[in-house]
Picture 1: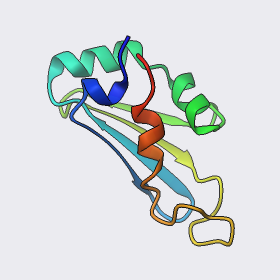
Picture 2: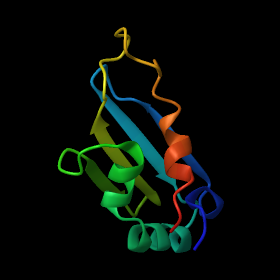
Picture 3: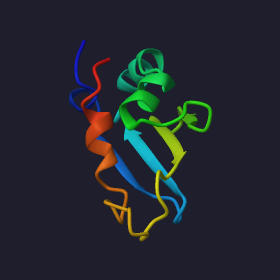
Picture 4: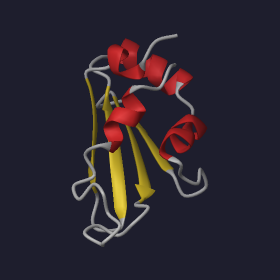
Length: 99
C-alpha cells in the first residue's frame, strides 16, 4: 500500500459552484490510472471527507487518466461556517489515503 499522492501526478480540489466541491486525481499515465481505478473505493473518499457516499459522484475518465469526485459542500461557500472558501484543502485529505 502507498499514499495516493505518491502514485499520481496531482490531487486537486476546488469549488464547483457555491454548493459543490470537486476533487481531481491526475494519474499521469495509464498504469497509475488503472491502479487508482482498481484500488481506490468511493467509500474511502466518502470516509476521508466525512461525506455521504450516496451523494458522492465518481467519474472515471480513461482518455485523460483522471478520476474525479464531486460532492455537496458541507457548508455553502462564503457562509459563516465555511472554513475553506476556495475548496482547496480537501485535496490533502484525499492525497493521504492509502491504496
